[in-house]
Length: 172
Figure 1: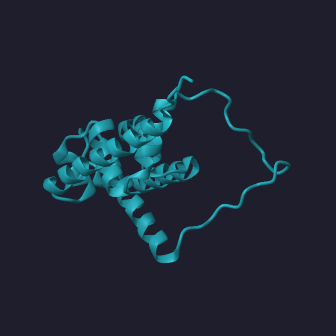
Figure 2: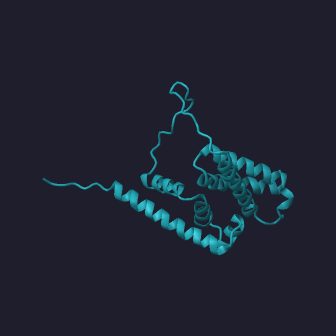
Figure 3: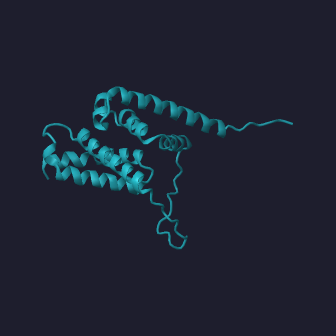
């Protein structure tokens, strides 16, 4: 395997994490990663040797994600029909997830895709504002605004969830 392909393969876990943050469906996220990798392999000449492929791959993925969002907006979203218990081929995982991390993930999924993408690239993936702005194709000021508004939205959602979870004991 050549050096370029090995460098691209090393980025798959990060691509999967970003795709799952963008999409609410694990299978759709895996499809997005696969589409991104296919496009990257076909257009490998566009990547400059010696540089990390990370930013290039994330840019490809973001553009494919935006294309999907636009396609859904034009055609409407497909609905999944629930399976009967006899038709279900797998069962959900039995391990318990931490309530706090579940609430954060749910809150992150509740904010707009533009804000979610900006937050994930900078706060989770560790890209600089300039790199993230380039990957998303927006000015740095727009990116910073999306991050600030996304953080505000997250705080409000998480504060609301915390308030709902609070139980008061009343003595008689």
